[in-house]
Length: 153
Image (cartoon, rainbow, N blue to C red):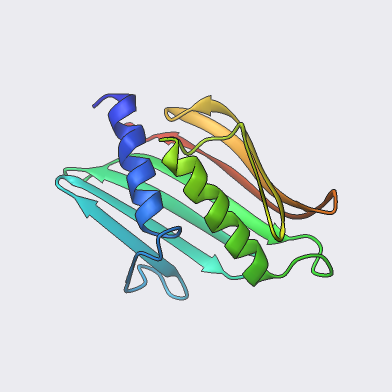
């Protein structure tokens, strides 16, 4: 498995699930919301808890073996500036643009009607950490921390 191939799979899965309104499946854990995607031997699951403030994990399997995972925690910092619906709209629109570029990691900024989306990260598909934020009138109103990489036996 090459990291370029894995990156393409991750981008396709992310674009088809949360951003694309994808395949909701039965919860894998009590209280979780799960989104699933499959292509050939590849399988992806995004499983998260919460709404306005949320925590989750994305996992990619190849032939039944986990090969990559990412954890994240996102939260509204300023409800007076942005709510969950506007934050979600901003995130989906911004990530759609990023995924069109064939990538899922930071160094990306996008402006929309509800604020400026900014994603910064270090590392690559194999091992990374990053932060996304939405700024409203120059003030950080939403933030999400994420990290992940290859899973090895």
